[in-house]
Every structure is written in structure tokens, then in C-alpha cells.
Amino acid sequence: MSDAATQEGSEEGTELVRTIGWFWVAIGVLLCIGGAMALLATVFASDYIRPSGFPLTWFALYSGGQFAAGAVTLVAAGNLLRHQAWARPVLEIFSWLFAFICGASGIWLLCRGVLAFLSAVEGIFSFAFIFNLLLAGGFGARFFVSARRLRRDDVRAVLTN
Image 1 (cartoon, rainbow, N blue to C red):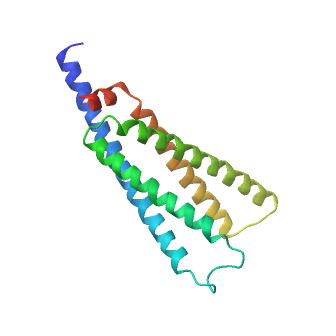
Image 2: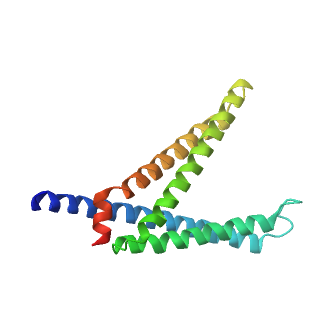
Image 3: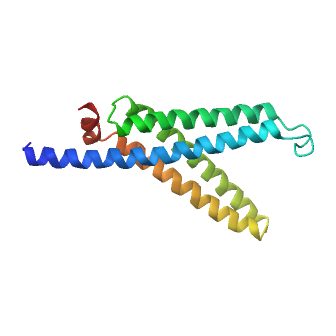
């Protein structure tokens, strides 16, 4: 392979690492904000706000897990931007996990939408169904693309240098 082809592949790999890294920084920030707000809601939720029998401990565990996932994502994304090789498999695992979650929620929404259509339910549910299906599909596709790009050889070459 010529030096020009190696340089071009290296520039493309560096650009991919930068794009994927900043994408995961944004996802990590959103996960941390969502987890922190949910944790605050569990701490300050009064009996008036909380429905009877609401499993607040499970919600708190989920919120804490979301915050921890956001923190790990932020650390890994920051190190990916610094071209650390260990960050690539961590973000690849998160990419596949989130793509699976978005795909499963998209299928669940599709089933609910079909049932609502068969039941002749109309109104705001139809708009919410379409919006959430597009959101789940869009994010699922973006996580899938992120996972596939993290597996590319030019990205691996940039990270091992």
C-alpha cells in the first residue's frame, strides 16, 4: 500500500474516531442528565406524587444504572477522542446493547400500534406511536452504524498508534 493511500486511510479513520467520539460524548451527557434527574425524583418524590405500590427502589436502581452507564460512556468516549485503544471495545459493546434496546422497543411499539389500529384507537396515540417508532428506529440505526464503524480496520489502526 502506498504512503498516500495509508495517509488517506489514516485521515478517514481519524475523522471517524472524532465523529464517533463526539457522538458518544453527547449520548453520555444525556444519559448522565437523565439518570441524575431520575435519581433526584426518587429522592424527593413524596407520597402524594408516588402512586401506591410504586417500586421506587427498582426505579432508583435503574436511574443509578443509567447514570453509571453515562459516566462510563463519557470516560470511554473521552479516551476514544484521545485515541486510546481500550475505549473502542467498550463503546462497541454499548453500541450493540443500545441498538438491541432500540430495536426491541421499536418492535414493541410496532406491535402496540398494530393492536391500536385493530382496536380503532385514534388521536394522540397515533402521533405518539409514529414519533416514538421513528425515534427508536433512528437511534437504533445510528447505534448500529456506530458499532459497525468501530469495527473498521482504519479506526483500529488509528487507535493503536
